[in-house]
Image 1 (cartoon, rainbow, N blue to C red):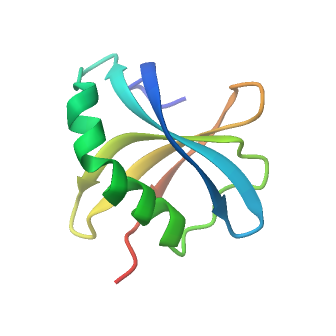
Image 2 (cartoon, one colour):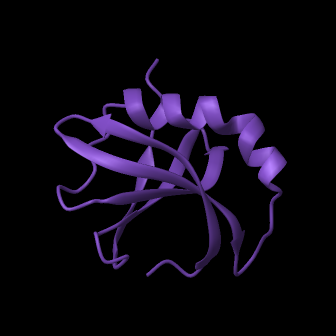
Length: 99
């Protein structure tokens, strides 16, 4: 698992990503940072849009996708931690906004 473990998260939306339904959440506390729910709510529409419309394919057994890092890097990707239906870590996806 990634070294920046998610401690607390809040729900953003349930989205349809290609053929799968995914509960999208955002981290408000990890091992290395805290962010306010207000900050997440301010970014909510943008985060949902990025994940929903990106060409990035999430693993087929992803039930929950947790946005850990907001837009960063040269491609403005977001880091999304993919979890299965039991909350078990699958992978961290770099989801790039559609241009």
